[in-house]
Image (cartoon, rainbow, N blue to C red; front, side, top):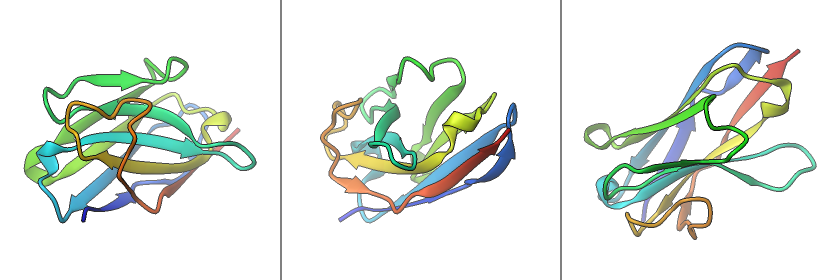
Length: 124
């Protein structure tokens, strides 16, 4: 069983940056593909970014590529999401997820484990 705990969310002005972290425990972190998703009020959850555990290949939602960067540190059992040039429409709860197949993940997964989420609010 893998536990995921997100942190780093908060209130930021438009144009600002945030770095989200997701700490994993209870499994062999390097064997998991990891992803970030978000859910805004009244909207469905959507894919943000993912990184494989096999070769750290990354994928992004088309609309976010260039502003968001996903990375992982297997030594620290952590995955990160660097967010820049934030916009009010980026306001959402951001979730970290783990896929037990390190070569899979991506936008579809399916992901086996989910964190509780961290709130990101971007003010205009």
